[in-house]
Image 1 (spheres, rainbow, N blue to C red):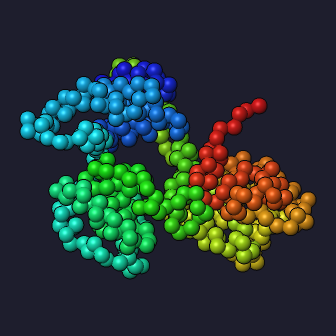
Image 2: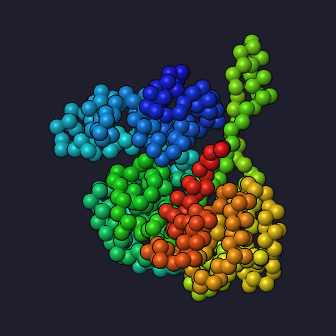
Image 3: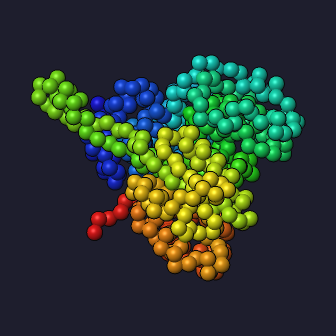
Length: 444
């Protein structure tokens, strides 16, 4: 079973070997692969190492599992329309009356994709979307008290799904237009507003069959229509860090921890399984996250220019600490680092730079500051301290809330930028910083 998969995927330029099959088998044994959608997600996690792998992976997946050959320069939808698999699926779905109706091919392809990517939710209850739709007030005004209680916990296990199949797309779009005019804030875990992780027909990451997915990745690929218009889901990943985009930033920074996962040979299990096979020893691999991952955050909290961002930064790393197991140490400074950093916000408890440098070299270090100051403040002593941090901690980046247009004309920013990789303090900037932090360094 699946024995030809590695060779087929390598033919698309992907990294796949016997370890791919072993990891996939383990996922199947643990009950993580119950549908084709599950297979797509699990195998993607094993095979896709870089963003540029996604295109080849999609082509390989559809070719291997569905016999849908995506030619160079051809869209996935066109390849599906021309495939024998889709024709057989369409014939099985439509009776003679349906075949003469006005059902569009685009709608059929969308339904086909929804079924292919349907994942196995732990859904214990299916409730009527019509009942929810009729109960909700289309003219309800948004206010802080209306925000869903579970807005900060949208990644929880979903236990119920709302089915909106018997509501027409026109009705949903009409309701969406009204909600768009009323909605003022982000929402999560609810059933009415555009949000995340709930059973509302509008949003993403939830369980709403035949709803409208807006912004972000899908949950179980159940949507009948997808909208990427940020006017419907106002999260600007290029905006400076704030309460509205902090979850997007958290998603970006999460890559630090995914990169720390390590794969090692499970010797006892390899021997045990080999003996059962009569001496045929196949390497048994185990993947584990590095629970000893260590992070240092250095925050400039000394001036009015940084004051709007300090709380957001603290909130971001606090959420990161809650979601991902790791050691986190936070220190403070003003403008730049001299002989000391401080362990408290009021900067009254000094920590000598030598003590900071005593930390293990494998700490990930995030420095957050606008790097804008009078040139005389960036003294030789400061240069020496900053360079010592960069030399000790190879995984080190500087996140800057100062608008990019000012960077080139500010001497101190350019000087600090020559020491540390510097990125904007935005979700996109954080994502780029994490990629740089995780990049492999060549041995000279």
